[in-house]
Image (cartoon, rainbow, N blue to C red):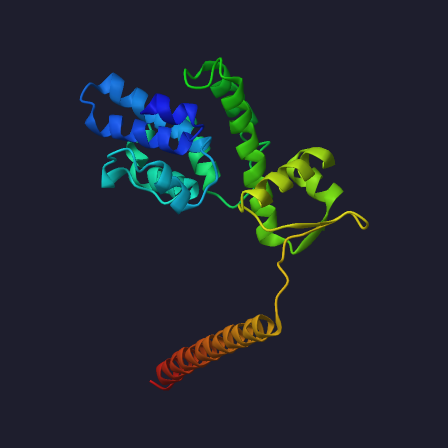
Length: 245
């Protein structure tokens, strides 16, 4: 089935096949190789909806133990569930941890990515997979930026993710097409807008939520102030009592 999914370019399901192998192998060397191959294929896996992935996997009797809804859930899941086992492949563990972080990673992981591309049996000699791994780093950075900015100039966005403006625009179009990211391009002003247009009801609901959060924070601050005053008064009373005695 690995060969079948490789031909279909469904590296998510290739990774799941390797996960099945990892769970059934008994020999330590083969088990570690399966774990390593699984991690690589989850890193290069396609962005797709859970339904699309499940539809493609219908012809395979996968174990429920290897189920993840989509790529990000899989990376987060194996990083947590197999933390101890991944310590035997520290380079891949480091990469997986970076992909679960909310930080720009492309420059930080460049050396590890190039080393893997040159030496890992699932990447060496496979130019398309190497390109996918590098692309996933850039895509991760674009997703991180979209979490912190509502709009941003294209040249500044390109600078943040370490790409040319042309490559950045290309990645944005691919991610929007795959529904991985929401973005609109204003080419006249050179702006990228990450916030979807909201109707009046959504705007009002957003305001209500913001007000509720603000009130909750004020209540918490008020409670802490009262608590601090009480503790201060108790300390002052004890000090006064000690002086009197």
